[in-house]
Amino acid sequence: MTTENERGDVKSIETRCLHLSRAEERRRYAETFGAISYPIYQTAAFEHPGVRDDYEPGQDHISLSAGYNYTRESNPTRSHLEKVVAQLENGEFALATSSGMAAITLLLNLFHSGDQIIVDSDLYGGSIRLFSEYESRYGLTFTRCDLTKQDPSEFATDRFKAIYFETPTNPMAHVSDIEKHAQFAHDRGALCVVDNTFLSPYFQNPLDWGADVVIHSGTKFLSGHHDTIAGFLVVREVGLAEELRSLSTTVGSALAPFDAWLVLRGIRTLAVRLDRAQENAMKIVDWLQCQRHVRRVFYPGLESNPGYAVMKKQARGFGAMLSFETDTKERAINVLTKVQTIVFAESLGGVESLITYPIAQTHASVPSDVLDANGLTDRILRLSVGIENADDLLADLDQALNY
Ligand SMILES: *Cc1c(COP(=O)(O)O)cnc(C)c1O
Image (cartoon, rainbow, N blue to C red):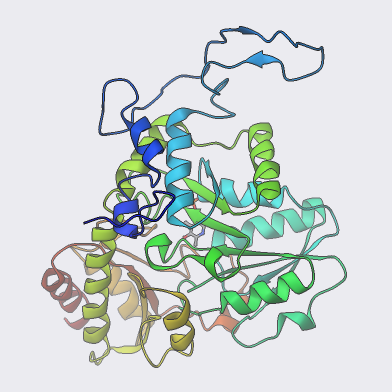
């Protein structure tokens, strides 16, 4: 049975993957024909019924049929997805963008030349590349700080505007305390931004711990089927939401209606996919730890992970991403070519298990001093665990690793 509070909000996250919380929103699902699946509004523009009586030149004066005007600005299918994602992240507003990188780029547009953003040293390679572009072209200052070892307050200047991190990170599974870093940022009037791609809202809600902005590559767990590219920014504060919405309309980074629909479709099974993928990941972690050719296993659910206690505090699960270090570089490369059920491919978070070689793929453009500082070697492989039968995945890893 479903429990609801006074606002009519559905409490459980599994149900929120399928239904918008408020009863009134659920009725709108039925809009015209009572469709269970939300329609794809594949249109660029919307008809205006007329011009408002109080029309004054230079003002926003066109009356809109149902609040829609032009799809770069807003579209019903995208709006529906944005409501679903905002609700899953316990946020008030979400913006769906054409990719995770588009979401991060949109966010950077909030800042001015000279502003300082403190970023964790272990980040998605594409984010590192984007930040160095913005530093050299537009004069934003990105100060790299190892949040597992260093205190960000030692780096903050009087132009400090935001702290930016992922938790847990990829591929080293570093964990950062969201509550602590949000407090640090807020004490200085700055924003706390968390890329929550790796755990998804099913396992972690950074806004609940004080973050101001949550980022997602919707390409990964949210859509979950390796079949589309999407991104999100989720916020609580109305002023910030309006600023981002207006920037999104101006720069044109919004997600197309069909892709919005694919992400909606993926989200409907988020809970069951992640439960199974995490269960599989834990079995693989246990197995890898006993393998003679495996030196180290990186997974935030290992009690030996220094971030384990923080994970237990701020997340409801440990996710389906793990990395491991083999004894030699040759063996690591061999595993990539020998896997059969597991696919050697970039990306993560989908129903099929994928294996990647971070040093040559996701982190190929990361400077070698940063790689060394993070301990990312040429023997480390990253596995995004899918929903296959766990024994089949173990058998595949066994034949790739041990023969
Ligand atoms: C993939 C990814 C991104 C970029 O998202 P795209 O959808 O590929 O643009 C950003 N952050 C993290 C943690 C990612 O894994």
